[in-house]
Structure formats: structure tokens, C-alpha cells
Image (cartoon, rainbow, N blue to C red; front, side, top):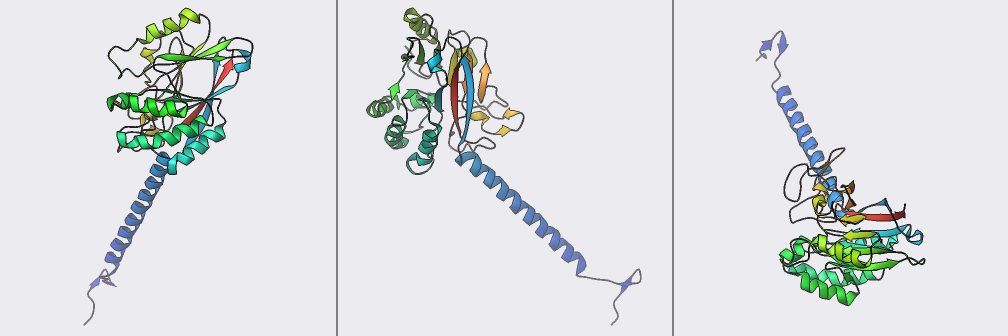
Length: 296
């Protein structure tokens, strides 16, 4: 029996189906490639540490403290980088810091406290470590236990307190630390704390360790620099734009990473190392910054 003809040519019953199959395969391949790329980006964005350095000029900084390297650890939120945080510890050691500043939100729950003794001990063997609380330590009732762990490891806990870093010429720098506003109801105010420092150290430059990245907390304080975290880098960072989501779930938050002029002091914000549960970072690798102080 002869094939029916269309426009003088034999009708083919297999070609159209073949084209559909090829298109479907191309779409599946493209989708698989896209999923693979996204998976790699999410892995890199959540598991590989990004280190950078920022120089900050401090008026009145003694000359022999010029170049002081402060490495900031912030917003770990119970994350671990390698077994016993070995990758994090190696990165800190390789940076050769003079001081390590931990600016809160290390853990989110009691079960994560087990990782702190070894981490605190390892960091203390690299450089002097100073710690201030974040909102999560207070929210989960962990501050007392963390204080005990850090005291045993030789970490200086700054509960609205300060330390003097002396230069050889007799001048110095005040390293101060304040508790997160999520703390005790009777906590000393930021303003009174700085005034208390100024009563005995009228002219010394003050570097303030804190957790929150809200500039209105600090803009009227008589300090040179605030080092803080909390913003998680905006969680997802859009190239040339910045952070997408705030920790309060607002869109396009400000002050999520880097150095800012906020009227009085300058404010440096770490993008942090971790995040809340089910909070994947994208284009926002875990951040381990170094702040280098320069005498102006």
C-alpha cells in the first residue's frame, strides 16, 4: 500500500516525535546543569571562608600600635568548618592577628556549646581573645555557661568593660566591649559606659566591640571605631548592589558588611561566618575579616 503524500512528499510519522524528544532532553540537560551550578554556588557560599583586610586610621593611636591586626570572628551560629573547626582555626592562625575579637552569636542552642572549649583554647593559643555577647546567647540563656568556658580558656569576656592596650611610649588604646541590647534589663547604658571610661582615660582612642550593626546605637558615642556583626551580610548578596535580606527580614538592608562613616565614629561590620537554621548564603561566603589600625 502506498504512503499518503503531503505536498508531494511521503508523510513521516517519526520526525516530529524525535524533535520533541530532543527538545525534552535539552531542557532536562539545561535544568540539571543549572541545578549543579546552584548547588556549587550554595556550597561555596556556605562552606569556604573568605578573608579580607581593611585599614582604619585612628586619631591618637600610638605609633608603635600602628599596624595592629584585629581579626574578627562573628555570627558563627554553631557552624563548624572542618572537624573541631580545624579549617577556621587554620585560617585564623595564617592571618597572624595581634588580637582576636569575637562579636557574638557563637551558638544558638545548648547542644552547640560542646564545640566551644576546643575552639576557645585554640584561638587563645594564637593571640589574645576578647568576646562580647550577641542577641542569641541571651535569647537562649547561654551567657553564663559561655563565660565559664571562656574564662577557663583564657578569653577576656567584656561585659560593659574594657582593657588597655599600651604602647611602649606610654600611650595606649582602649579596647571596650558592650553587651547586646537583648541582655539584662538593668544593663548599663552605652552612653554611661563610655562616659565611665572617659573619666579615667580622657584622651585615649577607644575601639568598641559590639554585636549589633545599627548605627544609631553608636553615632553619638565618643569612640573611634565600632567593630560589630549581626547583619549576616544580607544573607544573599547581589553583585554591585549588596545584601538582599536583613536579619529582621527587611529587603535591601543597609550596613551589612564593610566600613561605614556613621557621623561620629566609624563602624566596621563583618558579614559573619554562619546564619540561622535554613538560612543559606548566596554570593556571600563566610567572612573572616582583619581590621588593621593605622595611626593618623
